[in-house]
Length: 324
Image (cartoon, rainbow, N blue to C red):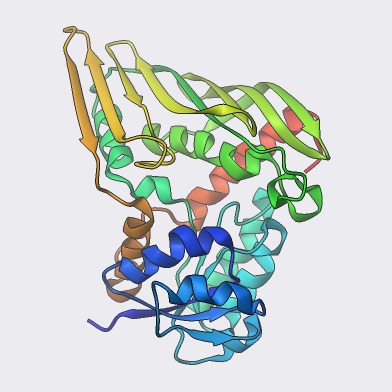
Protein backbone atom coordinates (compact mmCIF):
# COMPACT_ATOMS: atom_id res chain seq x y z
CA UNK A 1 0.00 0.00 0.00
CA UNK A 2 1.39 3.40 -0.99
CA UNK A 3 2.45 5.48 2.04
CA UNK A 4 0.69 8.75 2.83
CA UNK A 5 3.10 11.61 2.08
CA UNK A 6 3.06 14.17 4.89
CA UNK A 7 4.03 17.80 5.16
CA UNK A 8 4.21 19.95 8.31
CA UNK A 9 3.07 23.57 8.41
CA UNK A 10 5.49 25.34 10.74
CA UNK A 11 8.60 24.30 12.64
CA UNK A 12 7.08 24.23 16.13
CA UNK A 13 9.17 22.67 18.88
CA UNK A 14 6.41 20.13 19.55
CA UNK A 15 6.47 19.11 15.90
CA UNK A 16 10.23 18.70 16.00
CA UNK A 17 10.33 16.76 19.26
CA UNK A 18 7.19 14.62 19.05
CA UNK A 19 4.93 14.66 16.00
CA UNK A 20 7.60 14.95 13.32
CA UNK A 21 9.46 11.87 14.60
CA UNK A 22 6.10 10.09 15.02
CA UNK A 23 5.11 10.71 11.40
CA UNK A 24 8.57 9.59 10.29
CA UNK A 25 8.31 6.39 12.36
CA UNK A 26 4.68 5.49 11.64
CA UNK A 27 3.79 2.63 9.32
CA UNK A 28 2.01 3.85 6.22
CA UNK A 29 3.42 7.38 6.53
CA UNK A 30 6.25 9.18 4.81
CA UNK A 31 7.35 12.59 6.12
CA UNK A 32 8.50 14.48 3.03
CA UNK A 33 7.92 18.21 3.57
CA UNK A 34 8.28 21.07 6.05
CA UNK A 35 7.06 24.63 5.51
CA UNK A 36 9.02 27.24 7.47
CA UNK A 37 10.77 30.53 6.84
CA UNK A 38 13.03 29.92 9.85
CA UNK A 39 16.09 28.24 8.37
CA UNK A 40 17.62 27.78 11.84
CA UNK A 41 14.95 25.20 12.70
CA UNK A 42 15.33 23.04 9.61
CA UNK A 43 18.33 21.08 10.87
CA UNK A 44 16.38 19.73 13.84
CA UNK A 45 13.87 18.10 11.49
CA UNK A 46 16.40 16.89 8.96
CA UNK A 47 18.28 15.14 11.77
CA UNK A 48 15.58 12.43 11.79
CA UNK A 49 14.21 12.99 8.25
CA UNK A 50 17.31 13.75 6.13
CA UNK A 51 15.46 13.83 2.81
CA UNK A 52 12.94 16.42 3.97
CA UNK A 53 11.99 19.07 1.40
CA UNK A 54 11.71 22.58 2.81
CA UNK A 55 9.15 25.11 1.56
CA UNK A 56 9.48 28.81 2.33
CA UNK A 57 5.74 29.28 2.84
CA UNK A 58 2.69 27.31 3.96
CA UNK A 59 0.97 28.05 0.65
CA UNK A 60 3.89 26.59 -1.29
CA UNK A 61 3.62 23.30 0.59
CA UNK A 62 -0.14 23.17 0.10
CA UNK A 63 0.30 23.76 -3.63
CA UNK A 64 2.56 20.72 -4.02
CA UNK A 65 0.57 17.79 -5.47
CA UNK A 66 3.10 15.37 -4.00
CA UNK A 67 1.86 16.16 -0.46
CA UNK A 68 -1.13 14.03 0.57
CA UNK A 69 -1.66 15.12 4.19
CA UNK A 70 -0.57 17.95 6.44
CA UNK A 71 0.04 18.20 10.15
CA UNK A 72 -0.70 21.66 11.59
CA UNK A 73 1.09 22.63 14.84
CA UNK A 74 0.53 26.39 14.46
CA UNK A 75 -0.64 28.68 17.31
CA UNK A 76 -4.22 27.98 18.33
CA UNK A 77 -5.83 31.01 16.68
CA UNK A 78 -4.55 29.89 13.25
CA UNK A 79 -5.88 26.32 13.35
CA UNK A 80 -9.24 26.86 11.67
CA UNK A 81 -7.85 29.12 8.94
CA UNK A 82 -5.10 26.78 7.83
CA UNK A 83 -7.17 23.63 8.23
CA UNK A 84 -9.72 25.10 5.84
CA UNK A 85 -6.98 26.16 3.40
CA UNK A 86 -5.44 22.69 3.50
CA UNK A 87 -8.77 20.99 2.83
CA UNK A 88 -9.45 23.40 -0.04
CA UNK A 89 -6.03 22.43 -1.45
CA UNK A 90 -7.07 18.77 -1.42
CA UNK A 91 -5.00 17.68 1.58
CA UNK A 92 -5.95 15.47 4.49
CA UNK A 93 -5.57 17.40 7.75
CA UNK A 94 -4.35 16.49 11.23
CA UNK A 95 -4.43 19.67 13.30
CA UNK A 96 -3.18 20.22 16.82
CA UNK A 97 -5.66 20.74 19.62
CA UNK A 98 -7.58 22.82 20.28
CA UNK A 99 -8.57 22.74 16.63
CA UNK A 100 -11.01 25.59 17.30
CA UNK A 101 -11.55 28.20 20.00
CA UNK A 102 -15.32 27.60 20.12
CA UNK A 103 -17.49 24.57 19.38
CA UNK A 104 -19.45 26.40 16.69
CA UNK A 105 -16.27 26.73 14.60
CA UNK A 106 -16.24 22.97 14.10
CA UNK A 107 -19.32 23.25 11.91
CA UNK A 108 -17.41 24.86 9.04
CA UNK A 109 -14.60 22.32 9.42
CA UNK A 110 -17.06 19.42 9.27
CA UNK A 111 -18.71 20.95 6.19
CA UNK A 112 -15.33 21.47 4.50
CA UNK A 113 -14.28 17.92 5.33
CA UNK A 114 -17.46 16.50 3.85
CA UNK A 115 -17.24 18.65 0.74
CA UNK A 116 -13.59 17.81 0.10
CA UNK A 117 -13.90 14.09 0.78
CA UNK A 118 -10.67 14.29 2.78
CA UNK A 119 -10.00 13.20 6.35
CA UNK A 120 -9.72 16.05 8.84
CA UNK A 121 -9.14 15.47 12.54
CA UNK A 122 -7.89 17.07 15.72
CA UNK A 123 -4.63 15.64 17.08
CA UNK A 124 -6.17 14.27 20.27
CA UNK A 125 -3.63 11.54 20.70
CA UNK A 126 -4.70 10.02 24.03
CA UNK A 127 -7.68 8.13 22.61
CA UNK A 128 -5.30 6.18 20.35
CA UNK A 129 -3.39 4.79 23.34
CA UNK A 130 -4.33 1.22 24.40
CA UNK A 131 -4.77 2.34 28.03
CA UNK A 132 -7.76 4.46 27.01
CA UNK A 133 -9.14 1.84 24.65
CA UNK A 134 -8.89 -0.71 27.47
CA UNK A 135 -10.39 1.69 30.02
CA UNK A 136 -13.39 2.34 27.77
CA UNK A 137 -13.84 -1.39 27.20
CA UNK A 138 -13.80 -2.11 30.94
CA UNK A 139 -16.02 0.78 32.02
CA UNK A 140 -18.62 0.39 29.29
CA UNK A 141 -18.49 -3.37 29.79
CA UNK A 142 -19.58 -3.02 33.41
CA UNK A 143 -16.29 -3.83 35.15
CA UNK A 144 -16.89 -1.15 37.80
CA UNK A 145 -20.68 -1.28 37.71
CA UNK A 146 -22.52 2.00 37.22
CA UNK A 147 -20.23 5.03 37.04
CA UNK A 148 -20.91 7.36 39.97
CA UNK A 149 -18.10 9.90 39.77
CA UNK A 150 -15.11 10.77 37.59
CA UNK A 151 -12.25 13.02 38.60
CA UNK A 152 -9.29 14.16 36.56
CA UNK A 153 -6.22 16.29 37.15
CA UNK A 154 -3.58 17.69 34.81
CA UNK A 155 -1.04 20.27 35.94
CA UNK A 156 2.40 21.57 35.06
CA UNK A 157 4.34 24.78 35.72
CA UNK A 158 4.94 27.42 33.03
CA UNK A 159 5.18 31.11 33.93
CA UNK A 160 7.08 32.21 30.81
CA UNK A 161 5.01 35.15 29.60
CA UNK A 162 6.51 34.93 26.10
CA UNK A 163 5.29 31.35 25.69
CA UNK A 164 2.18 31.07 23.49
CA UNK A 165 0.38 29.16 26.24
CA UNK A 166 0.45 32.35 28.31
CA UNK A 167 -0.73 34.69 25.55
CA UNK A 168 -4.38 35.54 25.10
CA UNK A 169 -3.84 36.96 21.59
CA UNK A 170 -3.04 33.51 20.18
CA UNK A 171 -5.68 31.53 22.08
CA UNK A 172 -3.53 30.42 25.00
CA UNK A 173 -4.53 29.22 28.45
CA UNK A 174 -4.43 26.07 30.52
CA UNK A 175 -7.86 24.74 29.59
CA UNK A 176 -7.15 24.92 25.87
CA UNK A 177 -3.71 23.43 26.30
CA UNK A 178 -4.43 20.56 28.72
CA UNK A 179 -7.99 20.90 30.04
CA UNK A 180 -9.25 19.36 26.83
CA UNK A 181 -7.60 16.09 27.91
CA UNK A 182 -9.37 16.00 31.26
CA UNK A 183 -12.71 16.64 29.54
CA UNK A 184 -12.20 14.39 26.52
CA UNK A 185 -10.92 11.51 28.64
CA UNK A 186 -14.15 11.34 30.63
CA UNK A 187 -16.29 11.57 27.49
CA UNK A 188 -14.30 8.91 25.64
CA UNK A 189 -14.14 6.33 28.42
CA UNK A 190 -17.75 6.63 29.60
CA UNK A 191 -19.45 7.45 26.30
CA UNK A 192 -21.51 10.09 28.12
CA UNK A 193 -21.84 13.84 27.64
CA UNK A 194 -21.95 16.71 30.15
CA UNK A 195 -25.38 18.13 30.87
CA UNK A 196 -24.36 21.05 33.10
CA UNK A 197 -21.35 22.82 34.59
CA UNK A 198 -22.67 24.27 37.86
CA UNK A 199 -19.25 25.40 39.09
CA UNK A 200 -16.02 26.60 37.51
CA UNK A 201 -13.46 28.63 39.39
CA UNK A 202 -10.85 30.14 37.08
CA UNK A 203 -7.76 32.14 37.95
CA UNK A 204 -6.76 34.49 35.15
CA UNK A 205 -3.30 35.91 34.56
CA UNK A 206 -2.26 37.92 31.51
CA UNK A 207 -5.72 37.30 30.05
CA UNK A 208 -5.52 33.50 30.13
CA UNK A 209 -6.64 30.86 32.61
CA UNK A 210 -3.77 29.41 34.67
CA UNK A 211 -5.90 27.49 37.19
CA UNK A 212 -9.33 25.91 36.84
CA UNK A 213 -11.40 23.93 39.31
CA UNK A 214 -14.43 22.43 37.62
CA UNK A 215 -17.54 20.57 38.76
CA UNK A 216 -19.81 19.13 36.09
CA UNK A 217 -22.80 16.85 35.75
CA UNK A 218 -22.90 14.12 33.12
CA UNK A 219 -25.91 12.03 32.14
CA UNK A 220 -25.46 9.54 34.98
CA UNK A 221 -22.50 10.69 37.08
CA UNK A 222 -20.76 13.69 38.58
CA UNK A 223 -17.37 15.01 37.46
CA UNK A 224 -14.56 17.09 38.92
CA UNK A 225 -11.33 18.37 37.39
CA UNK A 226 -8.32 20.45 38.34
CA UNK A 227 -6.27 22.00 35.55
CA UNK A 228 -3.34 24.35 36.03
CA UNK A 229 -0.25 25.71 34.35
CA UNK A 230 1.07 27.12 37.64
CA UNK A 231 1.37 23.95 39.73
CA UNK A 232 3.86 21.13 40.11
CA UNK A 233 3.25 18.44 37.45
CA UNK A 234 0.57 15.90 38.30
CA UNK A 235 -1.90 13.93 36.22
CA UNK A 236 -4.44 11.19 36.66
CA UNK A 237 -7.97 10.00 35.92
CA UNK A 238 -10.14 8.04 38.37
CA UNK A 239 -13.46 6.51 37.36
CA UNK A 240 -15.42 5.42 40.43
CA UNK A 241 -18.36 3.07 40.10
CA UNK A 242 -20.63 1.32 42.53
CA UNK A 243 -18.76 -1.97 42.07
CA UNK A 244 -15.18 -0.85 41.48
CA UNK A 245 -12.61 1.84 40.75
CA UNK A 246 -10.49 2.27 37.61
CA UNK A 247 -7.43 4.51 37.66
CA UNK A 248 -5.11 5.78 34.96
CA UNK A 249 -1.97 7.06 36.67
CA UNK A 250 -0.26 8.50 33.57
CA UNK A 251 -3.08 9.19 31.14
CA UNK A 252 -1.85 12.20 29.20
CA UNK A 253 1.95 12.08 28.79
CA UNK A 254 2.29 8.32 28.58
CA UNK A 255 5.85 7.08 29.15
CA UNK A 256 7.14 10.64 29.48
CA UNK A 257 5.58 11.71 32.79
CA UNK A 258 5.52 8.07 33.92
CA UNK A 259 4.76 4.59 32.62
CA UNK A 260 1.26 4.23 31.21
CA UNK A 261 -0.65 2.09 33.71
CA UNK A 262 -4.26 1.12 34.40
CA UNK A 263 -5.40 -0.34 37.71
CA UNK A 264 -8.79 -1.89 38.35
CA UNK A 265 -10.13 -2.66 41.83
CA UNK A 266 -13.43 -4.49 41.99
CA UNK A 267 -15.93 -5.42 44.69
CA UNK A 268 -14.09 -8.68 45.29
CA UNK A 269 -11.20 -6.55 46.60
CA UNK A 270 -8.87 -7.76 43.89
CA UNK A 271 -6.60 -5.37 42.01
CA UNK A 272 -5.60 -5.87 38.38
CA UNK A 273 -2.84 -3.74 36.87
CA UNK A 274 -1.98 -3.38 33.17
CA UNK A 275 1.05 -1.47 31.86
CA UNK A 276 2.17 -0.27 28.43
CA UNK A 277 5.83 0.76 28.76
CA UNK A 278 6.66 0.99 25.06
CA UNK A 279 3.62 2.44 23.27
CA UNK A 280 3.96 5.86 21.59
CA UNK A 281 0.48 7.35 21.24
CA UNK A 282 1.69 9.90 18.67
CA UNK A 283 2.80 7.09 16.37
CA UNK A 284 -0.47 5.23 17.02
CA UNK A 285 -2.38 8.38 16.08
CA UNK A 286 -0.55 8.79 12.75
CA UNK A 287 -0.93 5.12 11.90
CA UNK A 288 -4.68 5.22 12.60
CA UNK A 289 -4.97 8.37 10.47
CA UNK A 290 -3.11 6.75 7.56
CA UNK A 291 -5.17 3.57 7.87
CA UNK A 292 -8.38 5.59 7.66
CA UNK A 293 -7.15 7.41 4.56
CA UNK A 294 -5.90 4.25 2.88
CA UNK A 295 -8.74 1.86 3.71
CA UNK A 296 -11.71 4.02 4.65
CA UNK A 297 -11.72 2.60 8.19
CA UNK A 298 -13.46 4.70 10.83
CA UNK A 299 -11.11 7.14 12.52
CA UNK A 300 -11.14 6.82 16.33
CA UNK A 301 -11.42 10.57 16.94
CA UNK A 302 -13.63 12.28 14.32
CA UNK A 303 -14.34 16.00 14.29
CA UNK A 304 -17.72 15.35 15.87
CA UNK A 305 -16.04 13.95 18.98
CA UNK A 306 -13.66 16.89 19.19
CA UNK A 307 -16.59 19.28 18.84
CA UNK A 308 -18.11 17.69 21.95
CA UNK A 309 -14.97 18.30 23.99
CA UNK A 310 -14.84 21.91 22.83
CA UNK A 311 -18.51 22.31 23.74
CA UNK A 312 -17.70 21.19 27.30
CA UNK A 313 -14.84 23.68 27.40
CA UNK A 314 -17.20 26.43 26.25
CA UNK A 315 -19.53 25.45 29.11
CA UNK A 316 -16.65 25.73 31.59
CA UNK A 317 -15.59 29.15 30.30
CA UNK A 318 -19.19 30.35 30.56
CA UNK A 319 -19.60 29.01 34.11
CA UNK A 320 -16.30 30.64 35.11
CA UNK A 321 -17.27 33.99 33.66
CA UNK A 322 -14.31 34.11 31.29
CA UNK A 323 -14.99 35.30 27.73
CA UNK A 324 -13.68 32.94 25.05
